[in-house]
Image (tube, rainbow, N blue to C red):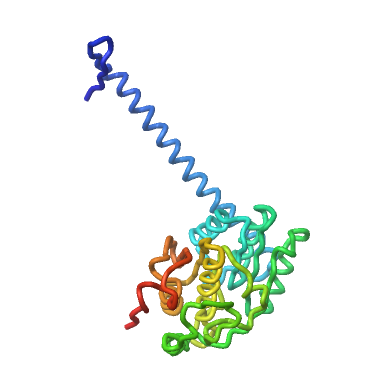
Length: 290
C-alpha cells in the first residue's frame, strides 16, 4: 500500500513508517472520540438516575415497584425532552422518574410547561411535596383523573371504536369528541393545549381489573394529531410498557407503525406529523389482531 503525489512532474511515495504513524494517529483519534461519546451517554444516564433518586427520596416510600422505567428507557425520555426543551410536556402517569422530566424541562428556561395526569391522590400529594420550593410551580401542573375502563375491556372497546365514526381521526376539539375512548372529563388546560411531547405511562394497567391505558393512548394520539394540524409542527409521543398487549394494540392502532422512530426496552417513541388520511389515524389501516 502506498500514497503518491505529483510534484514537479515526478511521483513521490510516502515512506511506510510515516504511513503507519498516520494510521495509528487516526485510530487513536477515533478511539478518543468514541470514548467521549460513551462517557457523555453514561454521564447523562447517571444524571437521570440521580435526579430520579433525589425526587424519590423526597417522595417517600417505595418508588421502584413494578412498571418502573429502566435506565435506558429513562435516558431516551430525557433525551427526547431535552431535544424539545423548553417545551409543552404532558405526562399521563406520575412517579419520581417522570417528575424528573419536569425538572429537566423547567431547567431549559422560559416557555417550559409540564402537566401530569394521575388517578392517584397519594401520588399527586407526594409529587407536590417533592417539587422543590421556588421551582416554578406555575410551570408544573398536576391534574387528577378518574379512569372508568378496566384493562380487561380493551378488546371490546377497540371493536366498538372501530365501528364508531366519532372515534376516527378528530377534526375538532378533543374535549368535544363523542368517542368513548376520549378522556373528555380532563381539564380544559389539558385538552385545549397544544403539546410538543406527550408521555403515556399511566394509569397502571398492570392487571385485568385495574384501569387500562386505552383512553390515555387514544387521547394522546388525538391531542398530537390536533396540535400537528394546528401549527404544522411534529409532536413526539412516548408509550411505556409496550410489552403488554393493551399498550401494544392501542399504540399500533392510534399512533401508527409509520410514526415509530425509536424504541428502547419497553418504551416506544412515535413522531406524529400533519397530513395523512382525513378520517383515520393511520394510513396503513387497522391492526390485525389474532
